[in-house]
Length: 168
Image (tube, rainbow, N blue to C red; front, side, top):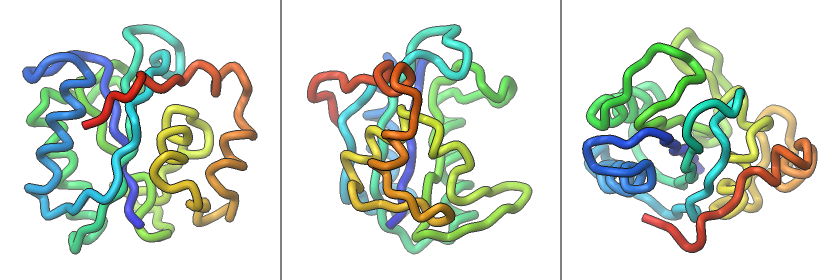
């Protein structure tokens, strides 16, 4: 199972953050990705400081023949197409596409850390992840997504809420 986290809190040329995520989802098949599930969209305060507009987040379950590095390169190309400018590590962005897990692969290179290093700390990843892969377990800790979610601070988890039935 390959899981991609999606997020945005600034508008792009396609419109609002939710519209940007919808448009980015339409670009994924062009990379050779097959989408098998898309979570509902969630809204959460900007992270980690709560400064800036709220984020819209989702998680997508995909399949692909691309190697992890090639997948990352393709996702970064899409981010750039939607106006992503790299700079402030935690700053606002038009689009963020992260490989959360790639078939349980554990790797730590200069360009790619798998599983995503902060997956366990972010309700805005864990909540939509629970929607698309409720049986997923962290490849290092072995903890399930629901267990990881219950370990979060209650206020942090409560601050991430689904936006009705917004989907791609």
